[in-house]
Length: 169
Image (cartoon, rainbow, N blue to C red; front, top):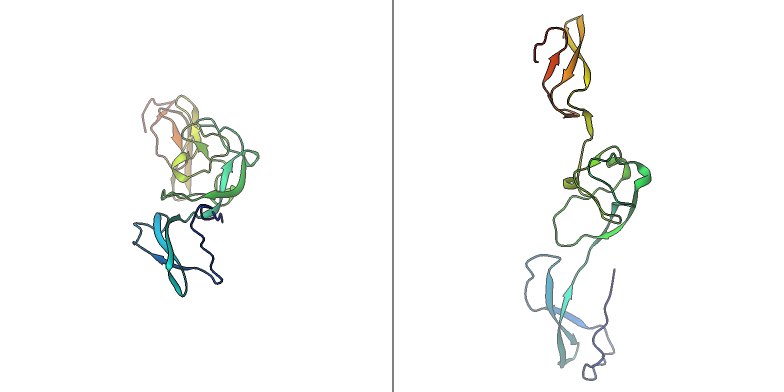
C-alpha cells in the first residue's frame, strides 16, 4: 500500500477529525483514477477535490534473470515477489512449480512478472529426431522406429515417418 500526502500549498486545511471522502464520479474500473471530494465534518466550506488512484499488489512469479526464447525455465531462474497488478487483465503465476519446466515464447527480461501468454511447453520432439512408434490393440503391442516430420510439444499430434516401411502416420 502506498499513500501520498496532500499538496503542502493547500489553504490552511486543518481538521480535528478524519476527513469525509465522497466520490465525484464513478470510475470506469476499480483501478481507474477517481476524483474525490475531501471535506472536514462540520466545515463544508473547507473541502477540496483531489484525484486518487488505487494500486493493487499481488504475489507473482518473477524472472530473476533474462529468459531467452525457447529456453527451459528452472527454479533457479525464478522468485516470488509483490508486483503491481496494473490495469491489464493478465493471469499471473503465484507459485514457482507452475512455471518450472515451461519455456519462454519470447525473450523475457529480468524482474518481469510472468504471465500465461509469455510461456509455453518446451519442444519434446524435433523434426528429424528418431522416435519410437507404438501401436496397441488390447493386450497386443507393436513398436517400430520412426522419424518425426515436425516439431512437437506435450499433447501435440505430429506426423511421423515409419523408417522401415516409409509410411507417414
